[in-house]
Image (tube, rainbow, N blue to C red; front, side):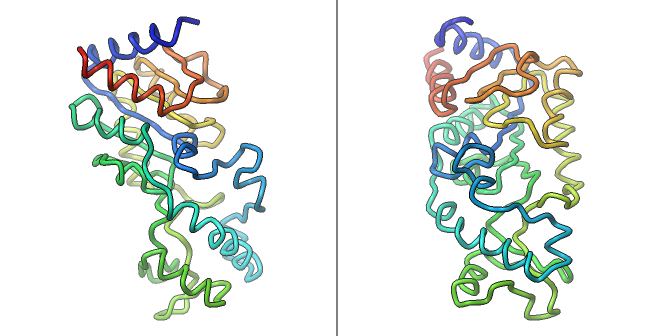
Length: 253
């Protein structure tokens, strides 16, 4: 493996040579902001049982269990702030070096960091939605109901089930966002893959699709992924360190 500085230089060269750059981010980019990822020890899946969409629809007890998890995670997400990685991606966009940012994350930190063209393929935790009539609420309003003892909130207009505007296991992916995401991926000539274990489909297929169409791939991930062998440049360092170093080098060019 080349040195850190050599790999940074390689990525800067790729960015300068590329005409269409996309980024794809997962939970690993937000751990530096204090948000738990899913698979690590002590992460979300280690602390809570995952309730599928089908269970949520079918069972009051499952809805109670689901909302208990969301209630406990609320303050962790609410108190999080963008880190160096989020800010660096926003700066790349502002500099005209990043055209499209696809994220699996539901925390909204990319937007807080200044990114504008963000495609949230797993939805957003900042809103809740009635699954029947589509009414939307700020998630803070539903948190107030949970803390007041409403264990499984329902819509005050149609009595439908309320759920965060996120995609759960077993729930259909948002069609419009997925179409936009794959359009970005197949037309880019460089893809930055940051902080995803690439274990969950269809998101895991995004780097493979980029590779098929001839894109260069840069992987920035603390742990190995099933497609590390596709990467032109591979980092196992923190995303904040890597991306801020790339941006600093670009500024110096």
